[in-house]
Length: 293
Image 1 (cartoon, rainbow, N blue to C red):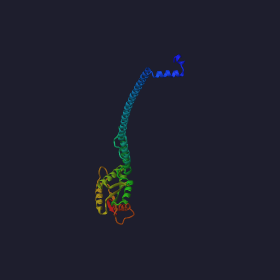
Image 2 (image 1 turned 30 degrees about the vertical axis):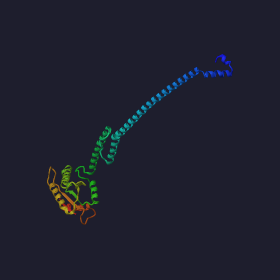
Image 3 (image 1 turned 90 degrees about the horizontal axis):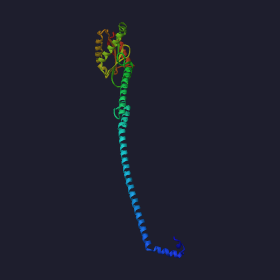
Image 4 (image 1 turned 90 degrees about the vertical axis):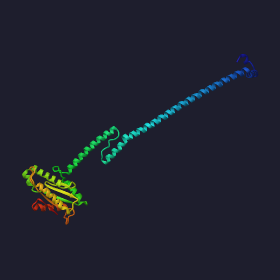
């Protein structure tokens, strides 16, 4: 403010201010200023609006990309789950079922699991074969391959407690000790093998031929009743005829046989003792024959 205006009274200052406000030049300048301010505000608003639209566009693009990424991730996860289920979970379920049922593994799934299944199946078959051989060795006589006494006792106990009719046939090789001492144990072993082979040939595959002692044999003939005893007589007669002929440096021998049926009359203490009584009768009365209890 100029110095001369500072010397004015308050009233003079007010009057001069009123003149300035009502002055056309002031009004024109004020209008110009207002228009410039308004223009600036409009430009600011436009810029703000443009920035907001740009931000919305960027956000929309990012949101769309995020949605697409999430969808792709979900699809990948589902695909992985399906692949894992098919290649790993399902094979493991089948493997567990096979173990529970004692079967070989199906060769399915991932390559590593298939290799595992093949290895397991190989070991399983080897163990199965080993167990079969062990069972056979435990159940059979090593020299003649007939069932051993342990197997005979199990089978006899089973049939004694069952309902299937059967015949118990006890067999001794006549004068075997004399032949064994005269010709040697090797010839004696061949005689026992020959006897076993002839008995297996004469009787059915469902019958059980057992070696229960040195020269003692037993046969459990299943589905056999006392009215069919003639079939046993015929079989024993045919075996004795073949044994009575020397063959391949094996001397002639004969069999003494005692038979008891599960449906026999006047049964004694046990079917084994009754068959043994019949066998003893044959041995005491000339051997080389068959007697029924």
